[in-house]
Amino acid sequence: MRLLVHDSVSPVFAPALLVDYLTSEGVDATTDCHPTDADGVVAFAHDDALLDAPWVHAITAGYDDYPVEEYHEAGLTFTNSTGIHGTSVGESVVGHCLTFARRLHRYRDRQHDRQWEHEPYEAAFTLSGERACVVGLGTLGQGVAVRLDALGMDVVGVRRTPALVPGVSEVVTPDDLHDAVSDARFVVLTVPLTDETTGLVDAGVFATMREDAYLVNVARGEVVDQDALVTALESGAIAGAALDALDPEPLPAESPLWGFEEVLITPHCAALTNDYHEAVGDLVVTNARRIGRGADPVNRVV
Ligand code: NDP
Ligand code: 7N6
Image 1 (cartoon, helix red, strand yellow):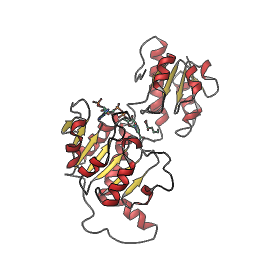
Image 2 (tube, helix red, strand yellow):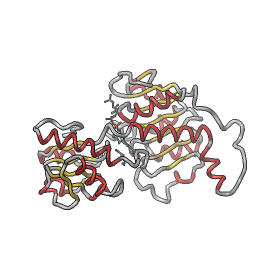
Image 3 (cartoon, protein in one colour):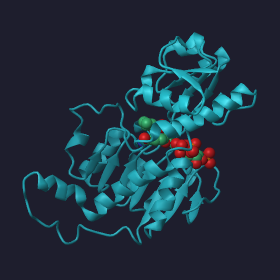
Image 4 (tube, helix red, strand yellow):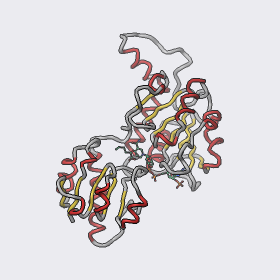
């Protein structure tokens, strides 16, 4: 079994890091062959040459940018990296919520002006006792839920299968999204981008949210109606937003979202961490071995 680590992974980690890790685990890997000559390709983005490979592994959980139907028709095996982001994204979301509650973003803004000044007395709050609504309760959602619960928050969740998961006190289905967000201080988006979730958070949802509520989007930009978000922020329908996923990416310089004091924009980095290549590598090794012995790979999409 010989694997190609595709150059598209470069924005996330140096391809050689994964080649070295796979080699150390006894899997033959290179950055330098054509997909046709490899038994599998590890990629961050699709290109048509991947259609010539028997197996493509996405280093991401989201695969909304991949032509899954074409892969299916081409008869290739396609696997993703769901399962590895609970800790990194969970900690990032805790950071977003704490930043707003403890006003850290405003102090950091003022630091650049060497300004020693308190926030208004009413502005600071504690997460403990506040409610979060987490939309999507897979790896990301559960990673978020257990951490916010540990900070004393009441966490409710939304998913299509209304089964409870650790850290969550109540789960409802998407039909009850409005009810679920209506009394939450934080609404956290951790769903995949699908036909059902495109534009899920729209003007109606913002109208239902509390005026002191924050949206946290670590899913995909398209899950939110971004024009409606700008309107909601301008009108004070919600208090603010932490946005790690935007539409489009990078967010254009002229977007009004850059300018709000209560908006925290991060460049799709909530999952980035210095052992990301190892977490992906472990999945790739597992699947290389499984495929090698004719077993079904884990995290199979098609
Ligand atoms: P999982 O497949 O583990 O979880 C997805 C969850 O969403 C499940 O609980 C599923 O439950 C729920 N879900 C699916 N459709 C709907 C719907 N229409 N309404 C409500 N809930 C729904 O995926 P991950 O947690 O690993 O990743 C989720 C997404 O997060 C990725 O697809 C990706 O887009 C994004 N992501 C972003 C990262 C970042 O860096 N910002 C990092 C990693 C992922 P059920 O089936 O019961 O509905
Ligand atoms: C860069 C982010 C995912 O879907 O969006 C994330 O896994 C990946 C590592």
